[in-house]
Image 1: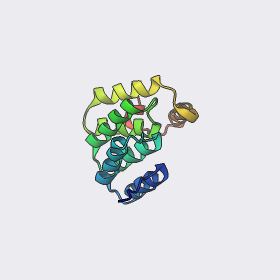
Image 2: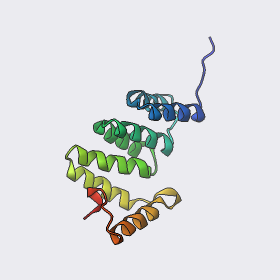
Image 3: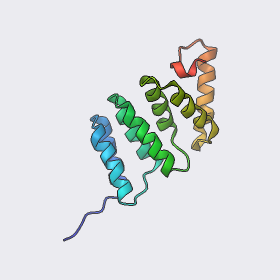
Length: 137
């Protein structure tokens, strides 16, 4: 019996569909399937699953995605970091949110995203824009 093997493009497409239809359980299942099949998820895959879980307020799952990404990636994605910070705050875990924030600051994000983040935060403060609570200190 021939077995169909999914590649990164297939997984990416499935995760995008899960994201657009708010199917967080399926998205998390796909992430786990990728890991079980020794197909290391990319930053995009973690970001997609973290966002999907956050959209439907599955904050504990977002933190799970964040922890799994830390174990498997050289650098956790910017989107996953932010989803994890917001989720920790939503769960009332201020110390965890601060820990994640500190970790995010200590790593170099690919494509200059950290620099863009810092620039956006400073611009927001300069213009009196109300930023999410974790950015207003």
